[in-house]
Length: 112
Image 1 (cartoon, rainbow, N blue to C red):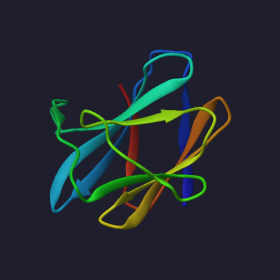
Image 2: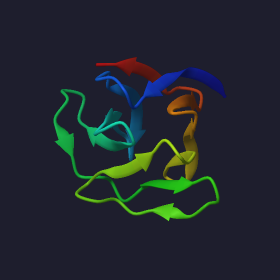
Image 3: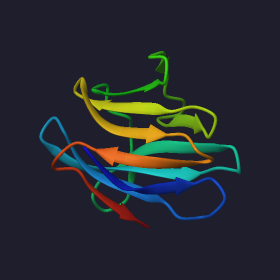
Image 4: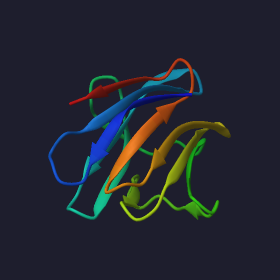
């Protein structure tokens, strides 16, 4: 596991990760909505938002599942999160008024 960058709720940079869901290449993106809330969503490789695959889940620091809302997970700077793909912990987001991303091997990070 290695640090891949950080996310700030206070700028317009969209962070992304190349993931594979059920053999299909996709992008997981994290984008600020305001200074306290961000959305985590999936796009195809062309950048078109897609429905959240059932095999993608998010939980907070105490292990409580975060339910998707309108095909997005909503996160805040207050908590830390773990995103799972097919049950495998894949992206860790550690709070600090920005999120520090750590990824499993094979997942690459990019910004938009």
